[in-house]
Image (cartoon, rainbow, N blue to C red; front, top):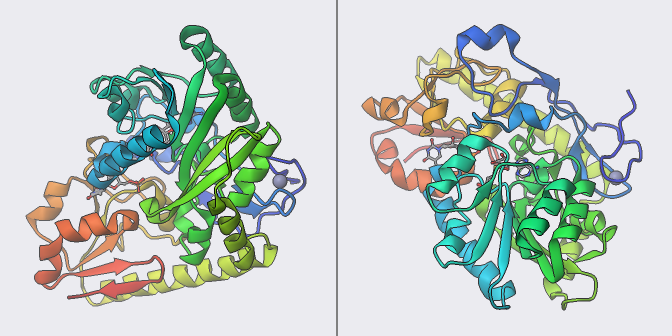
Length: 408
Ligand code: SAH
Ligand code: TMP
Ligand code: ZN
C-alpha cells in the first residue's frame, strides 16, 4: 500500500512496524475482548518535510469521547507545570489589556484554571465530554468540540479574535494540521501567538523512548518539522524552550511572519537537530535497531523474574504502556496486574495485553518483588512517593533510556 506524508503528501515508507496495536487508552472489560479494535502501528519519517509520523491512525472518535481515560490532574507535578506554563504565557505574550486565550485539548482544566482564577478571558476546546465536564468544576469555560476551521469560526463569531492559542500534548494528536493551521489563522489577531508543547523527537530518539509512539501521537515533532508545517500558513517560529515534562518535550511559540522578533533559541535548536542527524533517514534505522534490542532485554528480564519465582506488578497504566506491552507481547503471565490511580481505568483490563488494572490501594496492601515503571515520565514524583519500596528490598524495572534494574 502506498502511504503519503500527512503534511506534504510525498510517499513515505514506514521504517519499522510495532505490529498490531489496540487503542492506547482503550481499557476494557472481558465482554469486549473479542470485539477489540486493532490497527498496525508503523512509523515513518518524511525526508521532504522532515516530519516523523505514524502512517495509520484510528479515527479520532475512537480515541476521544465521553469515556476518555486520561485526566491531566493525575500528576501533581503536571498541575504545577501548567501553573508555571500559564504564568509564562501571561507574562511573556499577553501584554494587551483584557486578553482572550483559547486552549485546545484543555482536558480537565489544569492549565486554564490558572487564567480563570485571574479572571482572564479564556475558552477550552475539548472533544472528550467527560474531561470537559471535569474542567467546568474548576470554573473553566469549556466547549466540547474538536478544534478545526469550523470551530475557530464559531469561536470568533461568539467571542472575537484571540490573543493566544495555547496547547499541551494535543497538537501531535491531530492528523489534519492543515485544518488546524487554517483555524489558527482565522482565530488569532494580528499580534496573536500560538504556544504549544509536545514530546520532542530529539529526546525520543536519544532515549529510545519508543513508547511515545502510539495511536494518539500521530506526530512526534522536531523544531524543523514545526517550522515547515506552519510556514505554509504565514506563521514563523519565534521561540523554542525545552521542557523536562513527559520525558522530554519542546515548547514552540509561533507568530505571524515579521510581527515579532525571533529568539536565538530557534537557530540553536535547529543546529542541535542537524548535528544529531534528525533530518537523516539512517537515524531512524538505527532507532529501529535500538527498539528491537530494548524489547529483547525487557522480555529477558521479565522471564528471569518469572523463573526465579518473583512477582512483578506494573506501575501506572499509561498510554505509552500499551505500545510496550503489545510490541513485546507481555501479558498476565509475566505481570500480575498494573496499579493506576485513575478510577475509570480500575477494574478494567489493559488494551491488547489484557492485564488487570487495579487501584493504587491494592498495590499498597503488599508490595510485589518488582515494579515495572511504565510512568517513567513521572519518575521523580513516583520515586519520592514510593521511597519505602526500595527500603524494603523491592526493585524497579525500567526500560527508558535502557532496560535496567534499580535497587537500593
Ligand atoms: N492538555 C492536556 C491533555 C492532553 S491529552 C495535558 O497536557 O495534560 C489530549 C487531549 O486533547 C484530550 O483531552 C483529547 O480529548 C483532546 N483532543 C484530541 N483531539 C483534539 C482536537 N482536534 N481538538 C481539541 N482537543 C483535542
Ligand atoms: P500518561 O503517561 O499518559 O501521562 O499517564 C499517566 C498515568 O499514570 C495515569 O493513568 C495516572 C498514572 N499514575 C499513577 O498511577 N501514579 C502516579 O503516581 C502518577 C504520577 C501517575
Ligand atoms: Zn512530508
